[in-house]
Amino acid sequence: MSTPAPDLRVISLGALAAHPLRGERAPVRTGHSTTSLITSGDANILVDPGLPAPAIVARLEERTGLKPDDITHVFMTRFHPECRRAIEAFGNAQWLLSETERESVGVPIVESLKRLGETVQAAQAAGEEFPDDQRTMMDVLQRDVAILQRTAAAPDSLAPGVDLFPLPGLTPGLTGLLVLRPAGDILVCADAIPTIEHLEQGKILPSASDLDQARESFQDAIEIADLLVLGRDNIVVNPTKRPF
Image (tube, rainbow, N blue to C red):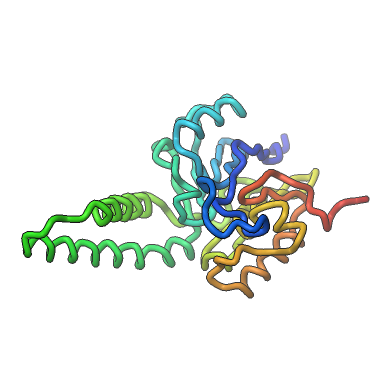
């Protein structure tokens, strides 16, 4: 008996905090990633759970009938809060991130936490009060470290027909997932192509750490797949692959 092809379903549509192609230069909404579920064999892979946990859990059940304990893997396309707000809701799953992304963010986070800790110690030694903004930053960094420690480097293939697809540029280790299907391959391209406007205009996000690399990843994405799951938008037909 042949193995069924993997399936992908969009769970929640994302949004950019500020959409530069609409002329937005500062955040006008809470940014969050598009969340997808990929099912392959016994694996239920949740990608980029960017909304708060109650919203993601509710939408997962609405769209698929699955509960948090049914999720076997959570894959983050990059280590950004807007891609992982709900991750703790999936405590029984394996949390995954590309090895390059994991290495590129780990050291800066730990160093930032160390510097902040030294500042706190100096303030306490001087009898000064610990400012609320620094306390908040400490909490954020401690959560980041805890998530990163819990997260493993993703293998090249997460399940049959579900492979990593590196898309560096926005961050050094941004990585999508290529879902191989007889009816047409699907690429979860994350913020390498965030919205339909970016796809149609051939634009990348200006916050990319390496603009040239980001442009190359954009081209790689539209060359490889028939369908694209955009980082802050819906699943769309690749305009370069249309038969009409």
